[in-house]
Image (tube, rainbow, N blue to C red; front, side):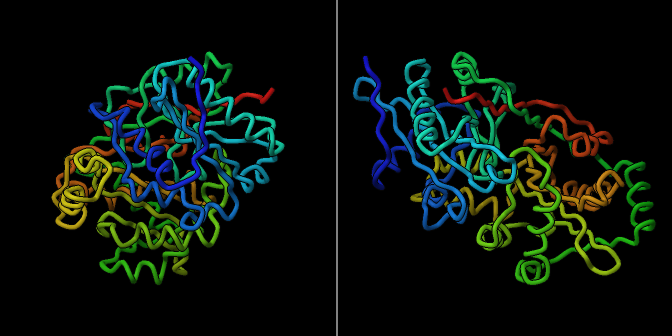
Length: 378
């Protein structure tokens, strides 16, 4: 039977777009649903600062009158300009195990992109690097995180059958919290601190962090992440948005800043307790009871055994000089004190040896891999 593709044009259809993922993975023990309100903000042209340089449309696929898939078609004009490409992205793609459905969704994005002068299709990617990236290709029996998406094993098979080729891979590690900070790690941290006259800065007030270093944290990210796959610099609107979104909910014990002698920010490490189990219990909704599970974790500090390593950024001229050891020499005792047993690294580009080298002093295992695909538009 023919597949029907419908563009999302109103709030009711947007809710169907968002909730399709929840229905498709309703009984899956590894999938972690996003909060509906967060998704509404992400897809809103008025609320998401990425629309300063992105354009997008969202599509639903129906088969036999039943919703069978979804996809977002996105053009990040800033990324295309930065990398000198004409690429349309497909993101937030989900579909039943039906080749006609997946093909119809991808062909819709291809046509949409071609009409706008694009020559390649790439994904799964979001608007920016702050959105979930890649299709899971290894680790289907591992719990997802709030920063990533889960998908069934049939997804990559569909993409490969449609002629997509690998464009980039990210690997993810489970890093075990040791009983004590490795002695060699401590020695390196102290050596680096003295050699470059560096300081660890800790805060107890989110407002003070925002006032003194909020802007600088995201400027550092723009500098540190500039050469990474598909990265486009955060705009001021995005920086303002993320400062308000993230800083107030952080446990500041798990935020470490490193500055030089002139108080210039040269590194930052941000982690937080995993919200995966809380989000699963909330089932994507804050009300009527979802708020309770998140409140218990974020504000009552009843932490699970797992933590998420959200962000590590080091100024380029200090990379490969051991500054990461300084960050984790401070953070590991915090993890131990709070009772965490392991950390999720979240995605790291497979060729980013600088990042992966920081796990050499810990017990760690690479347990997930995800992939972005690309192909020419015919």
